[in-house]
Length: 307
Image (cartoon, rainbow, N blue to C red; front, side, top):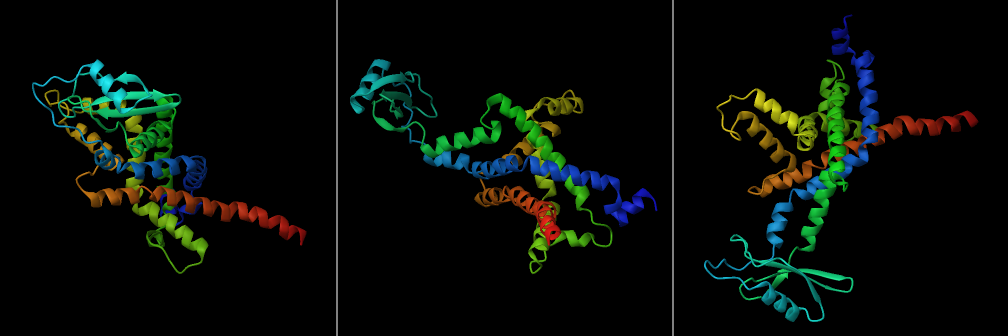
């Protein structure tokens, strides 16, 4: 039987599948916690834009031609609003047309407060950032940089490449042979829990393969965009407008799909937040299979030997 014929009928005997299985197994165990962190934070961050807009401190209307209060006047207004505090920062009296506010910081001992003030009247408008907004910023730093800054972005690129490898090896391992390939498409809910766990892992891997692969691939792009941009430049016409080229559009959609930026569709946002948890389930089911097939057998064998 040829190698291809053996792959089609009995892939379990092919060395490529055995190698892919080992790579898939140990890669999944090695980056499992990383996958859980990225998926949980990614699902939460789907709603970041909506929450930030909803919790943003209301700003006054922009008044064309009217001068803002001076820094001295704003400082005095902050001191009146927070007696006993020291003003440590005034954002200046140059205001933005879209959001005409002035950020002022006040301190007293270890207490630090950041507020927004009306630049025309000196009224205290509210917090510069809501605590949920600050939490979202922290989550974004954890998701994008693993809280390690630029070095964390590099580590994230490696992790995304490993997720891509996990998907590709998983596709190789998934193929059960021509006679039983349909078995990997569904879940037997009444089966014993080891079989149920296996079916769930296999079916999720098949149906969400492209989605998870997209997350891994675009994760690499977000960290190392230069090779992708160079590829777009190479295969684009010289007279095409930057940003409207086919490659640019594909990359832009990749970023949108990666983060689930569907602010105009609450249903899609909810779907994306739930789908972001699929890799978490796959890690859990994969770890259970490893425990059941490897660790549990190692624990049982010594007991059998003693009896």
